[in-house]
Image 1 (cartoon, rainbow, N blue to C red):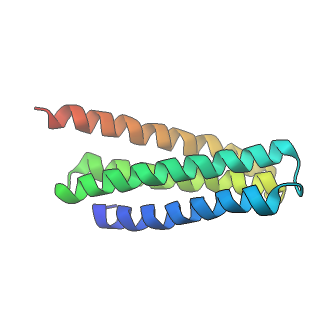
Image 2: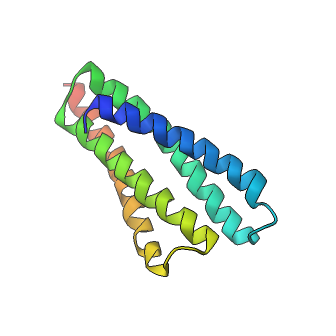
Length: 126
């Protein structure tokens, strides 16, 4: 993914993350148990934070398209989709339990995105 695609994904995922957070705080409170609501809020929080990071990395990539910057955009996008995207249905009790096996893969992608940013930052200093 390039910087333009990453910025588009960041905007969409950021907006959806805010909407998910508001939905959890207002519509779900009292309709699902406390643990499920906590899972929902964790998903919305990680989605919002990483959408902002995705935007920052995408803007960085727009300055100079480099392979590692594009890789971090891809990892953050996949990470958000897998991590938050599996937690939402699990919190609502509507997803198959096997979705839970994908959640850590999303987390690893998010961690990988951060590691790639660090490597790119280190290499950029040279």
